[in-house]
Image 1 (cartoon, rainbow, N blue to C red):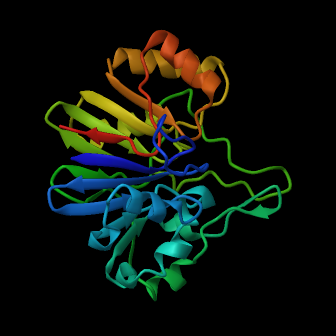
Image 2 (tube, rainbow, N blue to C red):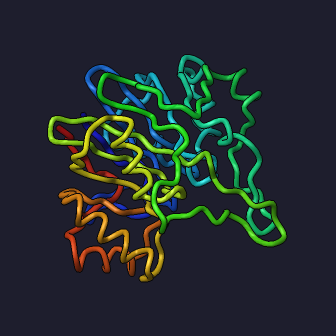
Length: 265
């Protein structure tokens, strides 16, 4: 499978694409073409064009969760002639209203609105997209250091972001985990991926880890990653420089940004 980064906070050095705080990955697995998240604006379309990727050949769009830095690009994608033919897959909570500090931060469309625009599928359960690629659905809490504390403030309804999910590719060299923000915890996601796929070996992880400071949780995350001997780590988006540096001090992390192409075996 081939993965191309269309949206990230960063762009690769000397590659003149556009970046923003968001995520969008273009996946090709055989003749199946999938867009995982759509970022905050239209730059996923502009970067795809610059990279020579024809998004009119897409068959599916998958959302990691409902926050607007992963879903607002639907405003532009929905204007494309091919949108009505696409299957859009997400957790049922992904298209519900979301707020933070009094500001709306959810998807630009409701489930009812999207049902009128494309082929919408909502699932809490794992869904196999190809023989090797699976949508995990709702991620259970499987360790004692990645507990859900809610996303919001005292003034807002507490959102546990149960819609946060990931994709997993079952490759010949082990599992490759593809995340959006990892609100459910990157180690919880990996553990659940192993359970769903019936595979213990993990070859790589790419995406946001929602880790910002060096603390006990990060130290336990590093220990978990070391234990699994994961050789390809691409922390990005909502993983701070401080957190990435702490991980890199123990386990090498790889450069990531818009324009990066990864071949996954």
